[in-house]
Image (tube, rainbow, N blue to C red; front, side, top):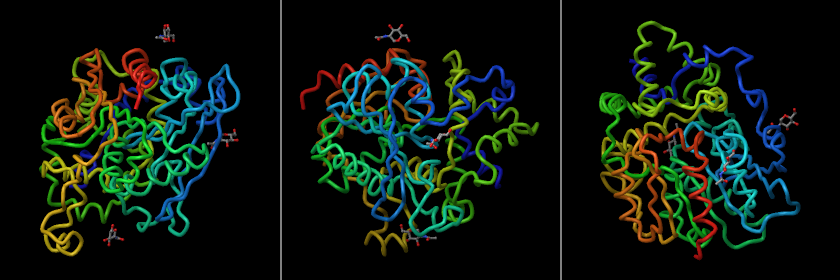
Length: 396
Ligand SMILES: *[C@@H]1O[C@H](CO)[C@@H](O)[C@H](O)[C@H]1NC(C)=O
Ligand SMILES: *[C@@H]1O[C@H](CO)[C@@H](O)[C@H](O)[C@H]1NC(C)=O
Ligand SMILES: *[C@@H]1O[C@H](CO)[C@@H](O)[C@H](O)[C@H]1NC(C)=O
């Protein structure tokens, strides 16, 4: 059973590939931390810390200007990563237009890279010890109502501006929807949101591997979040974890299939050079984040955590949690999505873009085999340039 749970939770893949690489083949960036990485490419970097209302402490990284400038660029933009991600996601692809953070910094934006609670830059709390269960009791709901508002307020205060631009990948889109639905005064603080494969609706989720696992596990979510609250346990680390699981003969096939699921079936493969960098920067997450997506897949509703009827009555005053009021979000939103996504399906993106009252752009990536992970590793001309051009020309 545990193994099946673990299987469901496997979100990244081919340790087989990682193992095949020896040190000489590893990208030199592999050995750098995020600040060293940003400096290596010729950009300035600042480290900031923000404390949320519920006292999680999150690090923000700032690239205040591009390679050729000095001072501080005039347009603040806040970038939020996805599940199993962190600030590194936006710089890991390296030079020029390959990394969205650098491209934006070179084009007049004051770039702020956010981190969610629980990742390597958010594993701190004023009172709670991250090595204990009490720290690990959150989902993307809390990221939406606490982490984003605190980070955005911090950036606005530091830059002395009333509004900023927002970018969010995957769960960074989920949390954005939630913040704007439940804390509507934040809508006035956003000029334009560019959401990259944002996860919201899951009515058309059709992942051939994850779908059956989610259905199989559905009655166990509450037990699982109580027993395996941090996933995978920190002592193991995600990379070691995958290496161990995938080394077992019985899981070889499974691991290969996972690889296909995430890479896409005919995409010509993941970016093998960057994969080790990505894996190195995979943090642990709270398992509730994963099971909350599981609940969305089962119920077809985008809504807060479902505790079961009894406790729902206590918490929400009704049998089931109320849906997030997506239709109340008036912020201009540009959505970027792809046919090759095996986690956030195009039909679900199309549906939510129709429900959002101010979806100003729905951009389909011009390569059908572009995958969910390619948003991080292979953006360049396919994603980053279209995002930048639209930002530059947008008159809110
Ligand atoms: C990266 O490492 C350098 C030392 O090599 C250190 O000064 C810096 O604070 C580190 N950055 C982070 C984000 O930990
Ligand atoms: C993106 O960068 C590559 C080099 O890394 C360059 O060849 C290409 O022209 C750039 N594209 C744009 C639109 O700037
Ligand atoms: C986790 O938080 C919820 C509220 O968000 C609370 O009802 C629940 O009791 C907490 N669980 C634990 C184990 O602290």
